[in-house]
Length: 369
Image (tube, rainbow, N blue to C red):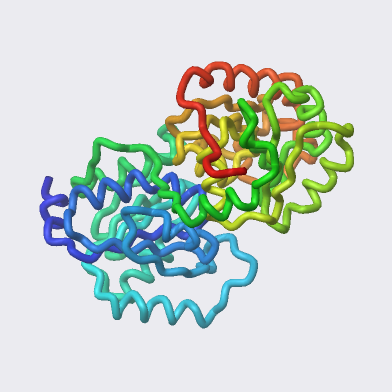
């Protein structure tokens, strides 16, 4: 492979992934392949400010640079940051860069940024002819030529420069200090005495990916205590969703509200130790997959390639003619791809998946008194 030979001397490598945390996690097998194939190389991840929080937990990443690119979906990108990031990349003197994208994203703005920074080798998928902006061009074949899982797409991309690995699982490394602080916060919650317990993440950034609140309420009422205590999670912005659920649920349900109360590291440790995650299709699904936690994924049909990767799972949706809309808000205003998933079906899936995985290693919440 002539291209692979050209990359043999790479010692400083930039990996560009500028969207969401879940996307970064699904890119990690490709990054792991690069790290294994170019031993001794220093690997820097250029990520959005939100996704940069993953940095301390990614074993193959040596450094993280944070940048909210204006060609990605961000609330308020800072124009001054554009010059700053190009200067930072130029000063770092990278030997090569890999630009990771989903097929609906254009890599050329990032490729131009790499060119302005003087990076001599740049690899990406691209639909248009990039001419000199990419030294290694993988022609975009999706969606017309079939759609790959996001993980497979990135593994195929780095294979173009000879990068491969035997372990293609998602990667995330939890920390003892987060585990200890989580256990302190959960002391007295009753989880230490529960034979089974689960986490429910009821929010999502995009409204189109949120299972209706009233459906979650019905799921929890149907489950009762059959899945053990249910820990409700979310960040502070999702407090309204959790409050609505708690107010509507019948008294006496075994719900433990941790919304807005956990750091990112603590949340990861919670997912690592629970028996199952029930969630909208958002970042926690991919974090759970990285940690080996079974997932019941309420999968809005906005895009097809982000199902949980190589973990016990149930992916639930209601088929609709308008699927694969790529919208943050349902363009048909009926939200039927999720609204059509009956709470009875969700309850059955939770119980089935718990029963299937019960014979495996039961996850203990260590140190909670």
